[in-house]
Image (cartoon, rainbow, N blue to C red; front, side, top):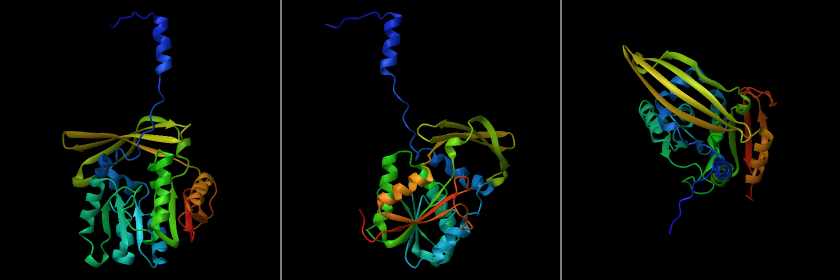
Length: 284
């Protein structure tokens, strides 16, 4: 027999406190399928090609195969493949992002086309000791919002690298200290087909977890027709000293800490955080 009990306000309040749960950490893989249609448009106005020459220089000095984690729309993958051709492989989890990379690849000569794969970077679909260089550019590792996922990716990068191979990591500095703001128009311009595009963005911070959430709305206007797409992107920032420790634990020796794409020294106020780490002969 089930009894029905009428709770007093005091009892209801106590129950609410006891059952309250902490909000879950957002999955950093969410939102990227929706972002695919706007990724190139936004990045052409922000990072542009400022990092391309740095990664191309690294690829030129690499004799073996090259793997890009988080290849996305091919913003970097295609310029890198123009240097060494089919020795470049790009992997990404988002089908819409990769579809754009594949479309752009068709315009590249066959001998300069990279291989593009859909896959999970936490469990790379390659044999051990396949690559001489693995890169995680433009804050890619910050999309890993759990410590477990970051560990898996660093372990996998070490596994697929040859002994002495290099892992390049590029982090966007200090996202957790950015000011929060609500529905600010951050960018305006012409999009594909001449549509007027506006990016309306909000920033939320979970400072204890060092997670930054960007709520984005892209508004496209064609004549009198206006459409919008909303989604959120989450990033978790690990400070450079802590990232160095994680790399060392995964089997790397960090050889260079850079603060810009010209090779300048790193400091906490640097414009970018670049780490180049060499895989040890034997893994832990």
